[in-house]
Image: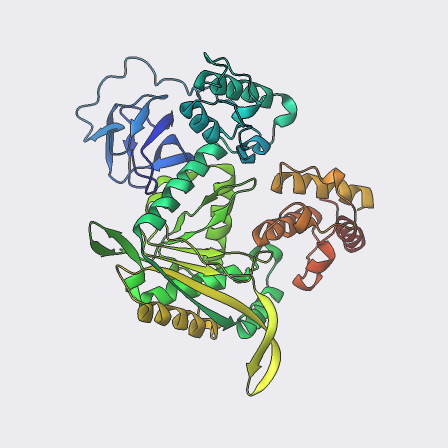
Length: 390
Length: 86
């Protein structure tokens, strides 16, 4: 079971795409597991023949444990029965978001809720003071909260609550995964922050001309320039590309930029675009569109979630002016772009309206200092002045 | 395409991009990106889908006309005229 992010503890096998005796090669998708990030396709990194499936469909497997054995084909365990049919665990619809976001209200005086019930209610987003208590002294117990949660889920299964979410996706679970990763980042990583305003006039002009010659599906978004410039800048400042663990920095084996994608209805994933610095702009654009589509519909691959060496986040056209981001551990940096906007800027001694973007960096002070961080932001600025070379 | 054809096509595409929303409840003049929470990539997918389904080659300079339901319907009804139906 691969670790698909810093805080994943286990995953549940929901589908096997191979059976004993099947030949597999590096990069093949062999199984689908359900995680806090939704259903993820697990790829294999060796070549061989599946000799035994150790974790059947439905098994919850801790990270690092064996899912299947691969051999040279000589030791295939006779599959007496066909592989188990795909049986998805019966999944209740998520609690309506309204219930999830409702804060736990202050208790009226004299109202009793047991600590365990309070904790569980807060996890579930239920207000325990609205529940009838069945405890000895009329207090609301854990069982009352669990009962109410179940009731609300049953209600949520009603047809009108059928906002189609991707398979295996549970917003509350994803919220927990984000909370764990971000709490760890804030607890362990001494962040430092820098920001820099970059003139995008030249880059956007170049992009407009290019897009004018391209059919609709081949046009590029400004975000692709920002991502490519970030990846190329990291080549010059490799100290910000990699991971930190056990007191040491491990440089990335390539520039695999995690691209932060917000999911409709809430949640966030940042799957990797491998070797983004070597990717021509049209391919990079296609990769970004593909990732966004798969992030939202399900079907991200294990290698995409476990391999980012840095993260880039762009707020897009309806975002805010700048972002002060939190590093995704064990990475050591995150680059953030605010919304591109027209603001006054000085060009050649004259104040003139220009398209500007504020690029920010949050980096791990255990690995680098602000001087290195500033070099990265300056490199991004310089690269964006020569868009044709991106 | 008639305005009604464009409208139902638009609703169908928006339903794929923002499955939780009901475009039929939108005001004709409301900003789609605002009301349906579309980001740049969603809007690009909308334009690509409209292009593929209508055959209209929508220049970037015209994207502004697609920001509202009324604007998009009028624009596509006008520009798809004479194009072979897909």
